[in-house]
Image: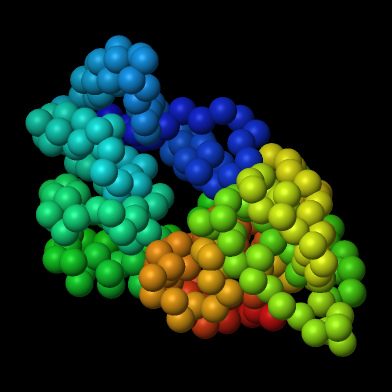
Length: 293
């Protein structure tokens, strides 16, 4: 039986999880005998032939095969293309849920959500990130069997045991996309003069130009380089514009209640204990392996 992994072709040495995680999944699947079939996530209006190229790539998948699809559950033309072609080919489709845009994108209508979720219900089995994501899917009417990852893969050749040395200065490390929508909470951090906490911030985005004490911007580098670059006593797993997790209108903050953030895997590989919200999907996992602050 033929086996395929369908996902985006990402450049090496990307900065964020949107690049690193799918590359790692495809590498792992290739070792397991899956043949990669690359499709774009977004098509350029200036290059209309891109959609046709991906269509022909998908047509090469043989009928009655097994196909793992890296699915963002997003309202994109590429996703519609993948499911429409694969369902006609009578293959065993296994969506691996990289993201869940129906949670963090408030502009997606209920009608769109239902149509997007129907694709999952037609799959053979679903690879979810964690139990909270699985429960969310079941509440939305998903009846397909679901298995869970609990932690996202993060491949590296630079790992060394006992390579992390705490600064012992109450320093919190935060790495990731520094856009206002995803990291705006950094601007709301308030500390008393008697507090000896400071933050080392890593990444790319507008926030990097808008930090002041107790925040210290420390630069940007590829996900592969983070093992030897990140410094701090704890890794902060947070997202959104709110500095607390009670703002239900902050969809990026709510999003972490349902996903396993890639930065969690990154901090653990760096040897850091982590700070997570007690409401987050990873809270029980972090307590179980005893790496919490």
